[in-house]
Image 1 (cartoon, rainbow, N blue to C red):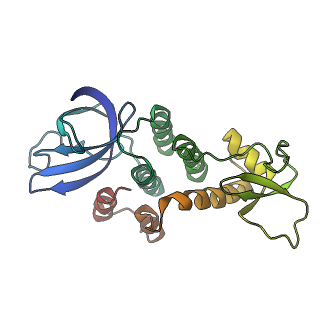
Image 2 (cartoon, rainbow, N blue to C red):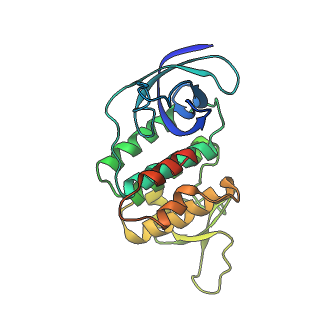
Image 3 (spheres, rainbow, N blue to C red):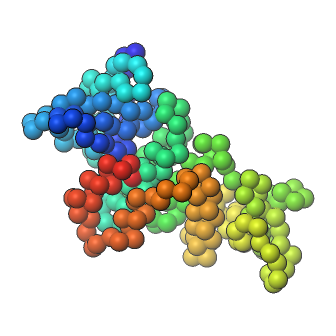
Length: 253
């Protein structure tokens, strides 16, 4: 199979032999794929400078199996320049995609959501709100979407004035008292559920509750292995070092 001029992003890269790279790529039409970039580590290789995360690319490859060979790569547009905390957020997005997407499973809608997320991070949008919206869309795309608009107990619309217990694999159940109630999942307000459904998160309590909900939801599908990007963020210096960027790149974040 030969593919040409396919938009895509590098999610992470690993050295392969002394001169080559194994790339994990995200594309709209082919989903997440692995590519062998022969000679990409050689000094003077023209593609070496832009085969990196957050750079929109036009890619070509040929071959079958799990590791086709990269046959062409060129920048599609200017790189999304992420700095400071936004860079860690970008590493986190990439790691989620590597961990949760099956190879060769197209997700054009998620690809657009990823592009939008990078643009928002570059533009200085609230990092927490941007990440929560992407996490919600990612879960929807991979078949684990959350019920946010109705009570699964009686199918009534979520009330902004009510308190809910979000029971995973089911949805929100209204709590009729805030005291002495054993919660099965995550306790949160109806206003938070509705704000997340509308993708309009700006109120501090809603952001905090949405983070708890999404973190628990994602943990159910990520397994026991911790996220490298989250570990790097927790021990981050004031400026991301090149060594840490390379490490996060290699581990898929």
